[in-house]
Image (cartoon, rainbow, N blue to C red):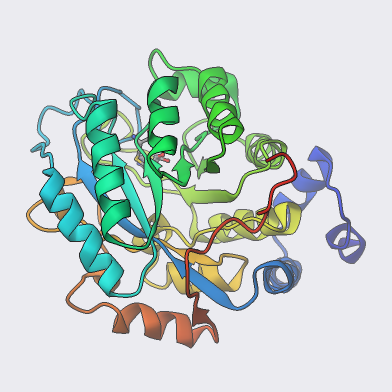
Length: 346
Ligand code: SAH
């Protein structure tokens, strides 16, 4: 019965809910195995690295779960200069990593032009793909950044339940989030999105909807990462996501979505020391090490215990190489573009 379900090509919402409800140890192992097979078939054995630079922790938004929310007045805020960002990008490239992820809170002091200037400077200095993860910005800026060389945009939908979306985000709507993703895709960005698992009030049905939304958006990257209670937020006393449930969601997402990049997230390694290794074994094929330099590194405190030593540039690349080798895999060389390129629509 489970075997038939796992071998399906297309999955209904009920199929996904049935899979998510499985708790029998052997059956969960079968789900993991299937996810690993599908990962191997569609992504091979390469694990692609994306070097993240968190260049500003200022944020206009007030997402209820996030330590960067603007109501958090106790956070020491910082902004990196253009020069600091470019130097950090160069040091990532020197390690052989060919994707730079520029991430920040929603910080409009970096205007469209300023971000465009940073993108073109990086692109003219080193041979990398650039992913932007700057929250919801205006459509003209997205187009400008694409024109000067940005390749990908990461904007998580966080939850596909519109009601819950409004509980977690003040003055923001799921519809806008999805519209932004569709626009980004229409102008040629590779798009990444995904959810947070284990948020207060979220149900298994909501998680199934998250996976279905990711399918509908035809994402290039889909991230399924655990909720971690952040001290300076209204959710400080809520329970963290369960590691095993998180792994099960990742595995089921791989089985349903197939040819998409799925990261073993930083959040999963904050929840479990071996979270990334475990993630790589249940469908993940991407790791996003954090290269935000000191003294800023600890201040990008979305949630606690975020910075794993594996990402520490002092130990890198041995730590990550060992981690990847321990799972019988190898580091992917090159940009690690979408598995869906060339896209039919472009
Ligand atoms: N401002 C950008 C980047 C946000 S931070 C944007 O809006 O896209 C990157 C991600 O951190 C968010 O998309 C969210 O999914 C995640 N995040 C924030 N707080 C979290 C928490 N407490 N636990 C787990 N993930 C969290």
